[in-house]
Image (cartoon, rainbow, N blue to C red; front, side):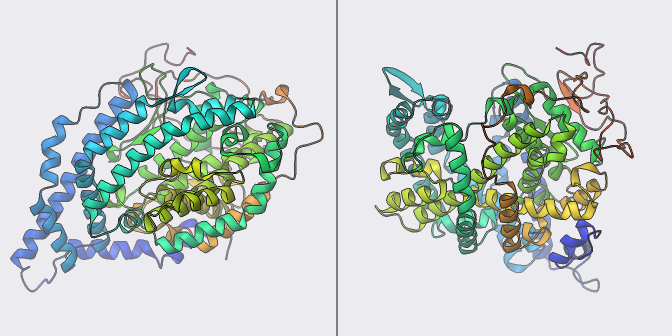
Length: 610
């Protein structure tokens, strides 16, 4: 295939020209059914009702996002009571019956109607699960366990395990946590049981597969393939991680050791200072031609009440996409920011004008976009532009690749264990899950550890979307490289190619736009083998000195807004020609609007460092 062929053409060929097909469907919906005869009154009424229902669903969803944004960024209570009447009206049985009639009789685009129906069904079920969900949320927030005479918060477990140097103490801490884990697992089981009642006669597996738009058996083969084809790479990675820190016999490693093994070295984290995270991300957007576009807000405030977890919402649809991020610094934080921006960009560029394509249905493409941007930390050229020397680049790639492989294998195991749990609710499920996680993660899991079964798997088959996104991101990376003729993140020709990819939203399946899953797993395994090192240099990796960025495009601190960055206010970005590396950017585009509300001119000190 011609390397210069645009990504849009590649996606079009794989999906049998979905964009033209979508246009034909839209034309059919807009035109009269029969120009020579009036529409049947019942069909006319149902079509009108479904159109109104879709508009109401969009309005309600946007209102929820607005309240969630305020809650997330300022800490105000999340009160959805004022929206309760609108939700009740949205879920009226009569309206949902009309929607089902439209689906059965083919009155409208069937895929969009199905996505709307699935959305309303999930909202109705969520409402019916309020009691179980509230109990679970309260338990997670307050759950503790006793260790060495102290009460330890459940949410602190992974951090404590990662920081604990003693293998004996790690095992004791893990064992102490299992009683609390069982309480949480029982609460998840109660929610599953209630969901099963609500969904009957449809099974949980059928409902979750429909929600994720996956074939359970195809995903089973995919997950098995990931575990089989990356087994050697993971064993090499595990041996290297163990040799650099825990230094235990491989056979003696347990589930309690994983957080310590996967801890990002402090020297690597030093290469990603808090002040540089957003600056690097924004400059990268400029390099690929996606800076200066209206509709995307990045909130970087560090308010005490702000939720530290990243969040992306669309209170105004693609015209108003907002990402909240509180920078802390470190490799994972850089990846989180890049990933969240990738998701936000995918949501921002949906151009069908349909709520069902913008917000509903399969989320794997937006996730794949996030994975693509997060993978920048494994690109030596990108790291070089951040001012990192060769030893630093090697160690960063090494750490990020280990996390990537672990996450993929864990997602594969989580999917397989969850499906087994749903298909075979018997006493041997925990035993089989222990064997599966031992195989996938390379450390011993006992049946007793699997009191965490529902915690270590997931609900609604999220692992299926995660796995598809991770595999597809590597295909996307390769095709963008081929299209650009150079690294995809160094040239503005990438922006239009990605925009074309994102424009249909969820109206075309991920595999039709990127690649069949068979090709995706091949790309993932190839990339995994490229990234898997044979071992650390003699004497181990260099220490902290090299982690500080050297002279380069980002080595000089520049002003950065303290509050909110509107990504629609910058000057056009044009890389300098004839430079080495190929894309040494100019000073990052200065945004025009930095105020907290995104519209008021900034105060005179808005560009100064805190």
